[in-house]
Amino acid sequence: MLTETHRVKQFGDEQTRRWFSDKNCDLIVWYKPDKNILGFQLCYKSGTHEKALTWLKDKGYSHDRIDDGEGKILTYKMTPILVPDGTFDKEQILAIFKKEIGEIDPELKNLVYQKISEYPKQE
Image 1 (cartoon, helix red, strand yellow):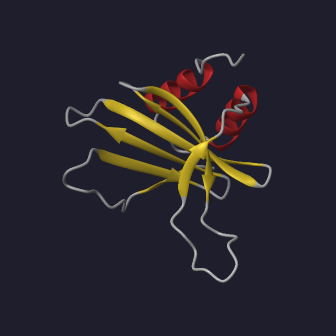
Image 2 (cartoon, helix red, strand yellow):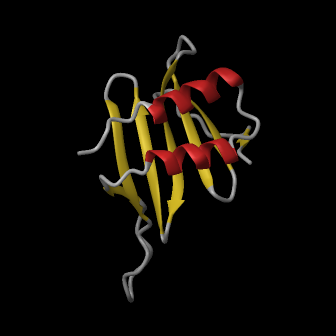
């Protein structure tokens, strides 16, 4: 179940963030200075890859695969980056979120669930 990490490093020039995690997923939530939610990122495992659904109030949705920087022979691990991945199984992600929801406050739970539900239909 998702539990909040209370010692999240905050950067002075960026939005305040909260971080919830467990062994299967992470939820990072960004807040505006007025305490309203700016957006969130839900990272989850899908098969052998980790993926990230990001929603930002002013930009909308993105869905990416996380390239963990591993796998290159005779090199150091590189910094993980997001790479486009259009495949998004809304029902799977809603099920994961419901299962892992944990100690998240009701207002935040409802917003994240609503935004996952509203993810645009893929053609």
